[in-house]
Image (cartoon, rainbow, N blue to C red):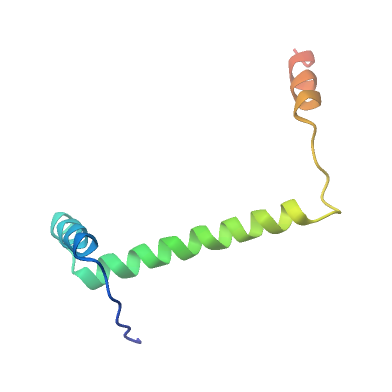
Length: 73
């Protein structure tokens, strides 16, 4: 496992320490989990943006979808 160093503002460090204490985890564990979750969200958002920009991906008309759903009863 690799190690990195980061500079954090004192307020962020205080919040990190409070979270680590509340979770009964080390700073490193809280930071690792936070980065993993951030990267998962980043990957999801990147995939969504790719789909939005894909000209071959059909775009739904919300008003038409709503009419279709309401008329299906």
